[in-house]
Image 1 (cartoon, rainbow, N blue to C red):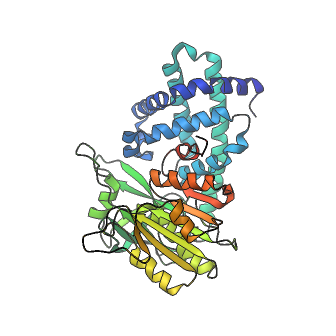
Image 2 (image 1 turned 180 degrees about the vertical axis):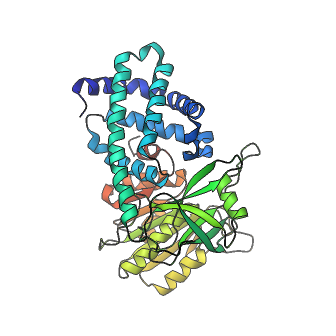
Image 3 (image 1 turned 90 degrees about the horizontal axis):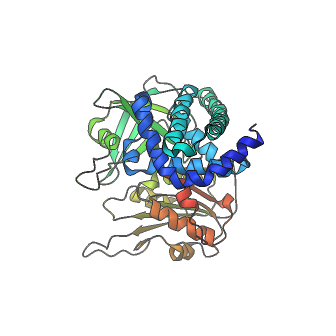
Length: 413
């Protein structure tokens, strides 16, 4: 355990770190990539360029400092980080690299304000947190390796088939090249794909599994990411998968991970409400398919937001499911105007997914909510649910970015 003196020093530095957080984390990443380029493959260059990784780390450091004497409140964050680390195959030997560069960055950014006592306290605090994460990650690695069909590290898979889901999204059906079994992942989880880079290194990305567990394949459905401007590069891995990977190609996969999933062993009487926007439909579709199979009598509400019909993936799949399952209600919501001569009616409409639309489909609001999509969509859904007083146990989400950016947007903020 940390001494009270260490705890006091860490808490006293929290306001300073919050003030300089992003400056500190930018300095940290630049320093680490210069001094330890071997860790660069663990990080997404696009997130570095956009600054989201720096924001996420800054928020995590500040949250740790503020709650150093009450770490129970960070339990969910620890699990999220541990799952992400194991998906990327981060091991105990990587922690000293991060720690050394983080402490050096604190000293270099804060200057004389970073006294020896402060650096010593942060060294102890980092070591304490590292031990917690290493312990949890060791357990996850072991569980993944021991599970039927499981493995540790990366395993070679072959592309069984490719299917076009929309103008931007393609599905890849993946089977083990060794002919072995597949693990029974939890619906909503993701896998990690590792691909070569032109410089001879590798890079990794997480992709949600878009089919239900128990199939003879693992399926990912990948959106081709295009640069939003002329000076912004296209997404490297998504374009590599769309362009270079064909039926019969090999891909390296790490085992399924993630703390966002539907527990199919739980059975609730209240409706299951599934909300997706854009490519956020992939984990939500996996949850939908598993729920229909495991809880066929439960009311399920499924709402998918998309720019338009051309870019929307899985509309026909979901509509067919609604025809087969009387407990499933589906609605498609498009933010672009309807094409000329086209009417959106029945289970489709124009606009955004908002409280009014959700309430029209579940008037008493009471349900288990699972949602995933771009940040504006997530923020609005989260704010509506908190405003309604929805219990945290009924609010589940996969948020790609600094989670604090979502959770701080309560009605009082």
